[in-house]
Amino acid sequence: MQVFISTRGIRKQVKAVALKKLAVNALYFAAVIGIVLAAWAAAAAAADSEFVLPGIAATFDALGDSLALSAFWSALGETLLRCVSCFALSVIMSGGLFFVCSVSAVAARLIRPIVSALRTLPTMAVSLLLAIWAGAYVAPVILGVLVVMPMLFSTLSARVATLPAELIEAAKMQGAGRMRIFTSVTLPCAAAALPESVATAFSFGI
Image 1 (tube, rainbow, N blue to C red):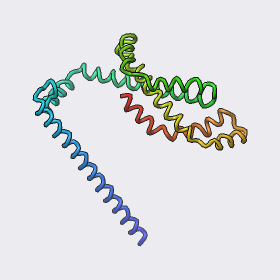
Image 2: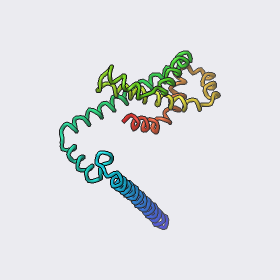
Image 3: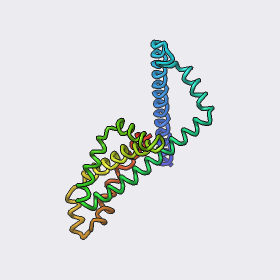
Image 4: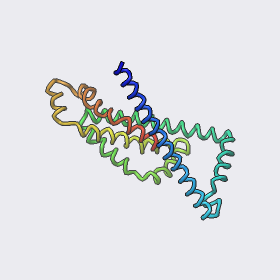
């Protein structure tokens, strides 16, 4: 009976702490929103020009007008479709390249410099060329892949680089081949970096 009462008391304390934390977070969120709106209003008043910086009321009026247009929702849907397509292609390509580099040292020496070069690609210049060459609909997908794919690949490679060499050697001594090492050692290690890297890459792609 005492154990039951003690457990119930602990649950109440945990619930109270959780509610307090939620209230504090909500308060901070409201404070941040208030600060942003106040800074926006002050900057708009200082600019005194709807062209330079529109006021809060004018902005939300324009937003309401946009939300009422069917063309807005159509454009938004196409944009989200491009984002999802870009992200899916990036995941497939980075996963494929990561697999090839993991099982072949020769392929790794060829692919990694190319991916590193893509990471330093001047996206603004490339976006203009892609807009001319591929069109306004396809260009964002290609540009997104060129940016997101190297990010995912580099994150996976950096994670696997932390694997102790002794672990790989031990797997080889046990008779594990390249595929077995990839599925049993390399892939589980890389998978630990996926949740954070995928979320970052997806938001960056959007």
